Image (cartoon, helix red, strand yellow):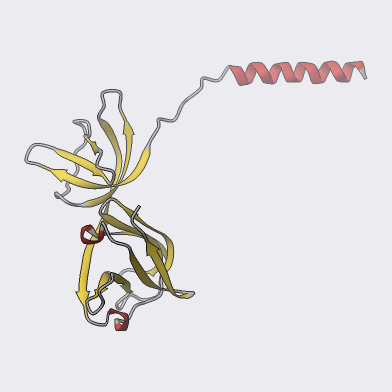
Length: 198
């Protein structure tokens, strides 16, 4: 019994020394946020939805247009600038005013998340995607005095594929100071999302 206790004690001591011998490798901090590209002739910056502007380091070279909506993965640097890890361009649309938008055909989608941030409405959704381009739009019923919106999504002629995560943004600057509702066709039926002024 005493030999067994000694063996367990020595094993634990060995494991502690082996565990302490490893150098700790820290993964750098990184952030993933929606941003809007602010591009001039000589520089490119990224404006977050809260108005904060991020300036990438000189090693960042991306072919982006002014006003592009992106998902930005970045690491803050001690100099105050950022190192870009990846940039994904996101669809950016506007509100279209039409008569009877509820009658526009729409394929069902799975809503992962929908939120208002700054002057944008952001949507994360899952759709069945194979290979062809899909279309989407945000429509306002122009016959109503209150802002009622309809999100419409069409797979067009895309054959059956696999569940794919998509991100979309819509400029809703005109509704920034108004309460509004959005109707979306989902696999569970039409859902209503209400947004209120904070």
